[in-house]
Length: 305
Image (tube, rainbow, N blue to C red):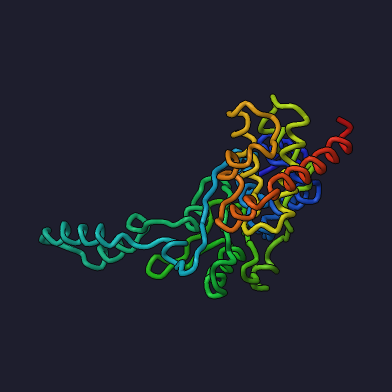
Protein backbone atom coordinates (compact mmCIF):
# COMPACT_ATOMS: atom_id res chain seq x y z
CA UNK A 1 0.00 0.00 0.00
CA UNK A 2 2.81 2.39 0.90
CA UNK A 3 6.34 2.38 -0.43
CA UNK A 4 7.74 4.24 2.57
CA UNK A 5 6.87 5.58 6.00
CA UNK A 6 7.25 9.11 4.65
CA UNK A 7 4.66 8.44 1.95
CA UNK A 8 2.18 7.32 4.62
CA UNK A 9 2.92 10.34 6.83
CA UNK A 10 2.35 12.72 3.95
CA UNK A 11 -0.80 10.92 2.84
CA UNK A 12 -2.37 11.00 6.29
CA UNK A 13 -1.65 14.70 6.73
CA UNK A 14 -3.00 15.47 3.25
CA UNK A 15 -6.23 13.71 4.21
CA UNK A 16 -6.53 15.86 7.33
CA UNK A 17 -5.47 13.25 9.88
CA UNK A 18 -2.60 14.06 12.25
CA UNK A 19 -1.08 11.01 13.93
CA UNK A 20 1.96 10.71 16.17
CA UNK A 21 5.05 8.79 15.08
CA UNK A 22 4.08 5.65 17.00
CA UNK A 23 0.65 5.43 15.36
CA UNK A 24 2.05 6.17 11.90
CA UNK A 25 4.80 3.57 12.23
CA UNK A 26 2.35 0.94 13.51
CA UNK A 27 0.00 1.56 10.58
CA UNK A 28 2.91 1.33 8.16
CA UNK A 29 4.15 -1.97 9.63
CA UNK A 30 0.66 -3.44 9.70
CA UNK A 31 0.20 -2.57 6.02
CA UNK A 32 3.59 -3.96 4.98
CA UNK A 33 3.28 -7.15 7.06
CA UNK A 34 -0.41 -7.65 6.19
CA UNK A 35 -1.51 -7.64 9.80
CA UNK A 36 -4.89 -6.44 11.12
CA UNK A 37 -4.81 -3.29 13.22
CA UNK A 38 -6.89 -3.21 16.43
CA UNK A 39 -7.77 0.31 17.59
CA UNK A 40 -9.21 0.75 21.08
CA UNK A 41 -10.24 3.92 22.84
CA UNK A 42 -13.16 6.17 23.74
CA UNK A 43 -15.89 6.93 21.24
CA UNK A 44 -15.13 9.94 19.07
CA UNK A 45 -11.35 9.75 19.45
CA UNK A 46 -10.71 9.25 15.72
CA UNK A 47 -10.46 5.46 15.32
CA UNK A 48 -12.87 5.17 12.41
CA UNK A 49 -11.46 8.28 10.78
CA UNK A 50 -7.98 6.75 10.82
CA UNK A 51 -9.23 3.89 8.62
CA UNK A 52 -10.68 6.35 6.10
CA UNK A 53 -7.51 8.46 6.22
CA UNK A 54 -5.38 5.38 5.43
CA UNK A 55 -7.68 4.56 2.49
CA UNK A 56 -7.43 8.15 1.25
CA UNK A 57 -3.65 8.10 1.60
CA UNK A 58 -3.47 4.82 -0.34
CA UNK A 59 -5.99 6.01 -2.95
CA UNK A 60 -8.20 3.00 -2.35
CA UNK A 61 -11.72 2.22 -1.16
CA UNK A 62 -13.18 1.30 2.23
CA UNK A 63 -15.36 -1.76 2.79
CA UNK A 64 -17.09 -1.11 6.10
CA UNK A 65 -18.75 -3.69 8.32
CA UNK A 66 -20.67 -1.79 10.99
CA UNK A 67 -21.09 -4.16 13.92
CA UNK A 68 -24.20 -4.22 16.10
CA UNK A 69 -25.84 -6.60 18.52
CA UNK A 70 -27.45 -9.46 16.62
CA UNK A 71 -25.42 -9.13 13.41
CA UNK A 72 -25.05 -12.46 11.60
CA UNK A 73 -22.94 -14.11 8.91
CA UNK A 74 -25.35 -13.09 6.14
CA UNK A 75 -24.88 -9.40 6.92
CA UNK A 76 -21.10 -9.78 7.12
CA UNK A 77 -20.33 -12.26 4.34
CA UNK A 78 -23.46 -12.26 2.17
CA UNK A 79 -26.22 -14.65 1.12
CA UNK A 80 -27.75 -16.31 -1.90
CA UNK A 81 -30.35 -14.31 -3.80
CA UNK A 82 -33.25 -16.73 -3.40
CA UNK A 83 -35.79 -14.84 -5.59
CA UNK A 84 -33.23 -14.80 -8.42
CA UNK A 85 -32.56 -18.50 -7.91
CA UNK A 86 -36.29 -19.28 -8.09
CA UNK A 87 -36.65 -17.22 -11.25
CA UNK A 88 -33.77 -19.10 -12.85
CA UNK A 89 -35.35 -22.46 -11.96
CA UNK A 90 -38.70 -21.39 -13.38
CA UNK A 91 -37.13 -20.30 -16.67
CA UNK A 92 -34.97 -23.43 -16.96
CA UNK A 93 -37.94 -25.69 -16.15
CA UNK A 94 -39.66 -24.56 -19.33
CA UNK A 95 -36.97 -26.29 -21.32
CA UNK A 96 -37.55 -29.90 -22.24
CA UNK A 97 -33.97 -30.93 -21.52
CA UNK A 98 -32.97 -29.70 -18.10
CA UNK A 99 -29.71 -30.86 -16.59
CA UNK A 100 -30.75 -30.57 -12.97
CA UNK A 101 -27.29 -31.34 -11.60
CA UNK A 102 -25.72 -28.58 -13.66
CA UNK A 103 -28.55 -26.25 -12.67
CA UNK A 104 -27.95 -26.93 -8.98
CA UNK A 105 -24.25 -26.15 -9.43
CA UNK A 106 -25.12 -22.95 -11.27
CA UNK A 107 -27.55 -21.86 -8.55
CA UNK A 108 -24.82 -22.21 -5.94
CA UNK A 109 -22.29 -20.10 -7.83
CA UNK A 110 -21.16 -16.55 -7.11
CA UNK A 111 -23.45 -15.06 -9.72
CA UNK A 112 -26.38 -15.85 -7.41
CA UNK A 113 -24.60 -14.74 -4.25
CA UNK A 114 -24.96 -11.21 -2.88
CA UNK A 115 -21.59 -10.42 -1.30
CA UNK A 116 -21.32 -8.65 2.05
CA UNK A 117 -18.44 -6.37 3.05
CA UNK A 118 -16.10 -9.20 4.15
CA UNK A 119 -16.39 -11.03 0.83
CA UNK A 120 -16.28 -7.81 -1.21
CA UNK A 121 -13.00 -6.88 0.52
CA UNK A 122 -11.44 -10.19 -0.54
CA UNK A 123 -12.65 -9.80 -4.12
CA UNK A 124 -11.15 -6.36 -4.73
CA UNK A 125 -8.66 -6.32 -7.58
CA UNK A 126 -6.29 -4.16 -5.52
CA UNK A 127 -6.04 -3.96 -1.72
CA UNK A 128 -8.80 -2.00 -0.04
CA UNK A 129 -9.27 -1.00 3.60
CA UNK A 130 -11.62 -3.36 5.44
CA UNK A 131 -13.07 -1.49 8.41
CA UNK A 132 -14.75 -3.70 11.01
CA UNK A 133 -16.22 -0.98 13.18
CA UNK A 134 -17.26 -1.25 16.84
CA UNK A 135 -16.38 -4.93 17.17
CA UNK A 136 -17.07 -4.72 20.89
CA UNK A 137 -20.81 -4.67 20.12
CA UNK A 138 -20.81 -8.33 18.99
CA UNK A 139 -20.14 -11.56 20.90
CA UNK A 140 -17.23 -13.98 20.78
CA UNK A 141 -19.11 -16.27 18.38
CA UNK A 142 -19.13 -13.54 15.74
CA UNK A 143 -15.46 -12.82 16.40
CA UNK A 144 -14.74 -16.47 15.61
CA UNK A 145 -15.99 -16.18 12.04
CA UNK A 146 -13.34 -13.52 11.42
CA UNK A 147 -10.46 -15.81 12.36
CA UNK A 148 -10.30 -17.67 9.03
CA UNK A 149 -10.33 -14.37 7.15
CA UNK A 150 -7.57 -12.83 9.26
CA UNK A 151 -5.42 -15.98 9.36
CA UNK A 152 -5.40 -17.32 5.79
CA UNK A 153 -7.29 -14.60 3.88
CA UNK A 154 -10.15 -16.76 2.73
CA UNK A 155 -13.81 -17.44 3.59
CA UNK A 156 -15.49 -20.84 3.68
CA UNK A 157 -19.12 -20.34 2.71
CA UNK A 158 -21.71 -23.18 2.83
CA UNK A 159 -22.82 -24.33 -0.67
CA UNK A 160 -20.55 -21.75 -2.29
CA UNK A 161 -17.19 -23.17 -1.21
CA UNK A 162 -13.93 -21.54 -0.19
CA UNK A 163 -13.25 -18.10 -1.61
CA UNK A 164 -9.62 -17.03 -1.54
CA UNK A 165 -8.54 -13.40 -1.58
CA UNK A 166 -7.74 -11.74 -4.89
CA UNK A 167 -5.96 -9.08 -2.85
CA UNK A 168 -5.25 -8.86 0.87
CA UNK A 169 -7.08 -5.93 2.47
CA UNK A 170 -5.71 -3.67 5.16
CA UNK A 171 -7.95 -4.60 8.09
CA UNK A 172 -8.86 -2.11 10.81
CA UNK A 173 -10.79 -3.35 13.85
CA UNK A 174 -12.19 -0.71 16.20
CA UNK A 175 -13.52 -1.03 19.73
CA UNK A 176 -15.04 1.44 22.20
CA UNK A 177 -14.34 -1.13 24.93
CA UNK A 178 -17.95 -1.95 25.78
CA UNK A 179 -16.73 -5.56 25.84
CA UNK A 180 -13.24 -7.05 25.87
CA UNK A 181 -12.14 -8.31 22.46
CA UNK A 182 -11.05 -11.96 22.63
CA UNK A 183 -7.42 -13.08 22.72
CA UNK A 184 -7.49 -14.96 19.36
CA UNK A 185 -8.13 -11.69 17.50
CA UNK A 186 -5.67 -9.80 19.66
CA UNK A 187 -2.90 -12.29 18.88
CA UNK A 188 -3.40 -11.78 15.16
CA UNK A 189 -3.45 -7.99 15.32
CA UNK A 190 -1.18 -5.04 15.96
CA UNK A 191 -2.62 -2.90 18.74
CA UNK A 192 -3.01 0.86 19.05
CA UNK A 193 -4.55 2.79 21.89
CA UNK A 194 -6.36 5.85 20.50
CA UNK A 195 -7.23 8.62 22.97
CA UNK A 196 -8.67 12.05 22.33
CA UNK A 197 -5.86 14.26 21.02
CA UNK A 198 -3.91 16.64 23.19
CA UNK A 199 -4.95 20.27 22.97
CA UNK A 200 -1.87 21.05 20.87
CA UNK A 201 -2.64 18.29 18.37
CA UNK A 202 -6.31 19.20 18.23
CA UNK A 203 -5.33 22.76 17.39
CA UNK A 204 -3.31 21.35 14.48
CA UNK A 205 -6.31 19.30 13.33
CA UNK A 206 -8.60 22.34 13.44
CA UNK A 207 -5.95 24.35 11.56
CA UNK A 208 -5.94 21.79 8.73
CA UNK A 209 -9.71 22.17 8.31
CA UNK A 210 -9.83 25.94 8.78
CA UNK A 211 -6.52 27.18 7.36
CA UNK A 212 -7.81 30.71 6.84
CA UNK A 213 -8.46 31.21 10.56
CA UNK A 214 -6.08 32.61 13.15
CA UNK A 215 -3.85 30.67 15.56
CA UNK A 216 -5.99 32.07 18.36
CA UNK A 217 -9.10 30.52 16.82
CA UNK A 218 -7.44 27.11 16.44
CA UNK A 219 -6.18 27.23 20.02
CA UNK A 220 -9.61 28.36 21.20
CA UNK A 221 -11.31 25.34 19.64
CA UNK A 222 -8.74 23.01 21.17
CA UNK A 223 -9.11 24.65 24.56
CA UNK A 224 -12.88 24.34 24.44
CA UNK A 225 -12.61 20.68 23.50
CA UNK A 226 -10.34 19.99 26.46
CA UNK A 227 -12.63 21.90 28.81
CA UNK A 228 -15.73 20.02 27.62
CA UNK A 229 -14.05 16.62 27.95
CA UNK A 230 -12.90 17.51 31.45
CA UNK A 231 -16.43 18.38 32.53
CA UNK A 232 -17.58 14.76 33.02
CA UNK A 233 -20.22 15.15 30.36
CA UNK A 234 -22.46 12.24 29.50
CA UNK A 235 -21.49 12.63 25.84
CA UNK A 236 -18.12 14.41 25.55
CA UNK A 237 -17.46 15.89 22.10
CA UNK A 238 -15.64 13.90 19.45
CA UNK A 239 -12.93 15.38 17.26
CA UNK A 240 -15.38 15.57 14.36
CA UNK A 241 -17.90 17.47 16.51
CA UNK A 242 -15.27 20.06 17.40
CA UNK A 243 -14.54 20.46 13.68
CA UNK A 244 -18.28 20.91 13.07
CA UNK A 245 -18.34 23.59 15.75
CA UNK A 246 -15.37 25.36 14.17
CA UNK A 247 -17.16 25.39 10.80
CA UNK A 248 -20.35 26.67 12.45
CA UNK A 249 -18.47 29.56 14.04
CA UNK A 250 -16.99 30.47 10.67
CA UNK A 251 -20.51 30.55 9.20
CA UNK A 252 -21.61 32.83 12.06
CA UNK A 253 -18.62 35.07 11.40
CA UNK A 254 -17.15 34.60 14.85
CA UNK A 255 -13.67 33.53 15.90
CA UNK A 256 -14.25 33.60 19.63
CA UNK A 257 -16.73 31.87 21.95
CA UNK A 258 -18.12 33.97 24.78
CA UNK A 259 -20.47 33.15 27.64
CA UNK A 260 -23.20 35.14 25.88
CA UNK A 261 -23.21 32.63 23.00
CA UNK A 262 -24.44 29.81 25.24
CA UNK A 263 -27.98 29.45 23.90
CA UNK A 264 -26.87 29.64 20.26
CA UNK A 265 -24.17 27.00 20.67
CA UNK A 266 -25.98 24.71 23.10
CA UNK A 267 -27.45 22.48 20.33
CA UNK A 268 -23.93 21.94 18.99
CA UNK A 269 -22.28 21.25 22.34
CA UNK A 270 -24.85 19.22 24.30
CA UNK A 271 -26.09 16.01 22.69
CA UNK A 272 -28.08 14.68 25.67
CA UNK A 273 -30.64 16.29 27.97
CA UNK A 274 -28.39 15.72 30.99
CA UNK A 275 -25.53 17.60 29.32
CA UNK A 276 -27.87 20.38 28.19
CA UNK A 277 -29.10 20.89 31.74
CA UNK A 278 -25.55 20.85 33.05
CA UNK A 279 -24.50 23.63 30.67
CA UNK A 280 -27.61 25.61 31.60
CA UNK A 281 -26.70 25.69 35.28
CA UNK A 282 -26.12 29.16 36.69
CA UNK A 283 -22.60 30.27 35.78
CA UNK A 284 -21.94 26.81 34.34
CA UNK A 285 -21.27 27.91 30.78
CA UNK A 286 -19.27 30.93 31.92
CA UNK A 287 -17.09 28.64 34.03
CA UNK A 288 -16.60 26.34 31.04
CA UNK A 289 -15.54 29.25 28.83
CA UNK A 290 -13.09 30.44 31.50
CA UNK A 291 -11.48 26.97 31.61
CA UNK A 292 -11.36 26.85 27.80
CA UNK A 293 -9.59 30.21 27.67
CA UNK A 294 -6.96 29.00 30.15
CA UNK A 295 -6.31 25.88 28.07
CA UNK A 296 -6.15 27.83 24.80
CA UNK A 297 -3.69 30.30 26.31
CA UNK A 298 -1.52 27.35 27.30
CA UNK A 299 -1.65 26.02 23.72
CA UNK A 300 -0.58 29.40 22.36
CA UNK A 301 2.21 29.67 24.90
CA UNK A 302 3.59 26.23 24.04
CA UNK A 303 3.38 26.88 20.32
CA UNK A 304 5.10 30.22 20.68
CA UNK A 305 2.26 31.98 18.86
